[in-house]
Length: 221
Image (cartoon, rainbow, N blue to C red; front, top):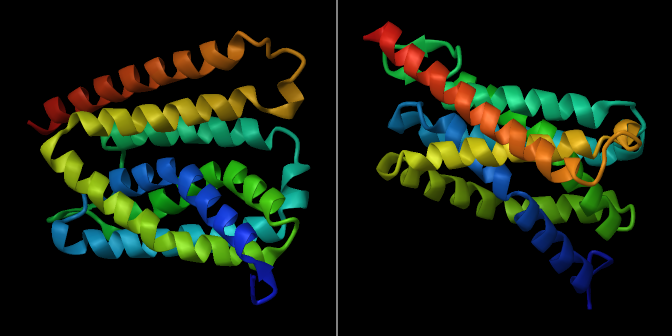
């Protein structure tokens, strides 16, 4: 059976891949929106997700050219380390009387999702056999699920602050994985490094983020 010329099996596969690989994206959406006033949190999640999805589709359209850029994965991993620490420490976002602005949250969501979506898009492109329309349908269907998941995580953070550290740890671990998987470093990355590097980066990111957050609280008190 087909829909718009696409096999149902291919569509289901694409949707499942996007949902599974977007778990960390839902985490970063929730973390970026947690300091926005509650009245604006849904707006931040909506526009952040909208911008992130738009960039993901652009990536899908140029995936072959993007993946040929040397050290792209390494640069993305390092940027994601910075984002993980920034989210944990409170960063240097612009503030209004009510708290972090919607735009600052949207910007963080889009940048982090763009960095983290390279692997997602590659997997989707492979499952879709090069069909951009198939990738578009898969991403489109998974959007409501990702938004719903980010809202659940956001509510959990309000009750259990430890989730913030877990979220930052997930981002840092993802960053470490991107760094060790950089093709240009394949010859120097021993098998042991594939566990040691993400572990070290996660521990350092959480430690630095914790110290910066404590310093920020002390300065504001």
